[in-house]
Image (cartoon, rainbow, N blue to C red; front, side):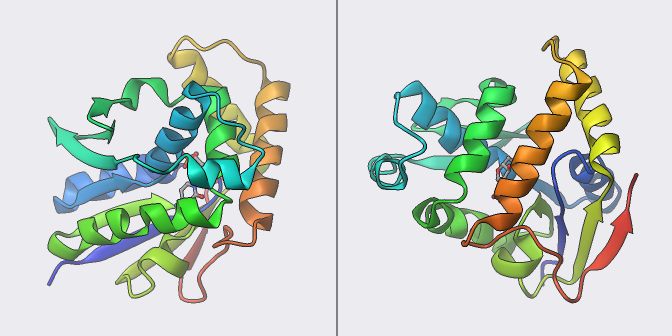
Amino acid sequence: MPFAIAIDGPSGAGKSTLARIIAKNLQFVYVDTGALYRAIGHSMLSRHIDIEDDAKVAAGLDGLTVSIAYVDDEQRVIVNGVDVSDNIRTPQVSMAASRVSAVPEVRRFLMNTQRDIAKSQSVVMDGRDIGTTILPDADLKIYLTATPEARAQRRLLDLQAKGIASTFEAVLEDMRQRDYNDSHRAAAPLKQAEDAIFIDNS
Ligand code: DC
């Protein structure tokens, strides 16, 4: 039977760093589900679809295929046959991902992609609703968080390492906005599963 570890929490809490280390040590597959929402946000932006309009976002899913592939053990996201992984880490795409992820059709669209991966292999999956919605029977659930300031500082260093210019204030503001969106949406909002272990990673 495959084993599933769910790691949820807000952006910049260190989920992917933790998940990668666990996956490497246990030889599980690491699944970054945020990349799927980013891929959809990116696709909507590049087609100039109004992401503030839920009906247009839902209609924009027509004919879209989003899947995950692994190249040299690194997760790649493929949209209609094109690997978009290198284009989904900008602040614009972060905000678009947060926005489109509130649309119930988008969440439904990605649900089976996420569940199917965990059916056939042991996974460490990170996101916002893995322990509550995608894998409610996960063997181990972790809710990883940190103060907004600690998370913004980390995200700023990530962006700088990628050569994307920003400031602490701008990143903190983006983070607060995304925290609000992600935890106040009606569809599968960010929240700690009752049986998750809480870790403050500040
Ligand atoms: O983890 P991340 O920052 O790459 O995620 C980008 C956005 O996608 C995030 O602001 C909210 C959304 N998301 C989600 O709604 N559910 C998930 N399981 C993962 C991400």
